[in-house]
Length: 305
Image (cartoon, rainbow, N blue to C red):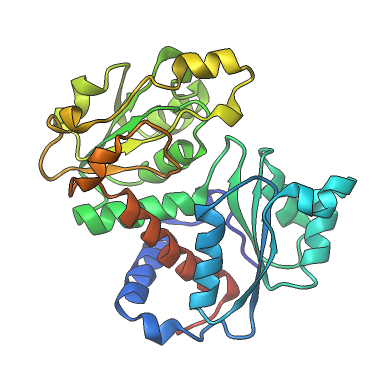
C-alpha cells in the first residue's frame, strides 16, 4: 500500500507517469468516468480549504466514485479530543482512500503509519503540499512545454509557504533550473531547505527583496500570499502582508512567453487586472489540479482505465 506524504515519496519516473496520465485524462475524460465506481474517498480537513478539498471531491466524482468526510476539525470528533490515529483507523473502515489536511506538520505521516487505506497529504502546516506540487508541475509542463531549462522566480512567503517548499524539492531533479527567491528578510527560504535541497543538489539560486529586479529573466513567476495563519502576532503580519504586489505595470517587465502562477487563495498580491493577461495561468492551474489528483487517486487505488 502506497501513500503520498511528501513529493519525494514518488520517483521522478512515477511523477512523469502521473503527469502523462493526467494529460490523457484531459484528452479522454469520458474514458475515465467509471474507473473508480464503487470506491469512496474520505476528505479529512482539519484546516479550512476551498480549492484543495473541492478539487479532490471533483476528482473522485469524475472518476465515478463517491466522497465522504468533513471540512473543519470542529465538525469532527477531534473537537472531543480524538487522536489523528484513531480518526483514520475509524474512517479507514468506511473509505478506500483518505485525503487529509492538518495544521500540524507530520500529522499525515502519523496517519499513514496506522491507516488501513492510502493517505494523501493535502497540506500539513508549513511543511509540504505534494498534490499542489503535482498541480504546479503539470501546469508548467502544459504551459511551457518542458520542466527543465527554466528560470523560476518564487515570490512572497518562502518561510512558511508549504507549496514553495514542495515545489523546490520537486524541481531539484530537473536540469538547468535557476531559482530566484524573492522575499523580505523575515520571510526568506528556511536555511535547512536552502542547504539540504537547493545547495546540495547544485541548483543555481539568488535571493532578493526586489521583484522588479528579476522579472525580465523569468520563465515562471510563482506568486504566494503572506499567510496570516502562520504568524505568531498580528503586527508582523500587517507589516509584511503587502511586501510584493504584482500589477499591470510590473507585468511589463515579464517576458512575453513567461507565465504567472499562484497556488491560491490570493489576497492582494496579484491585482485582478492581471487576470486579463494571457500569461496569468493560475486559474488554468486550478483546473490542472483536478486532473492530476484524478491520476493520483487511480495510482494509489491501483485502478486502470
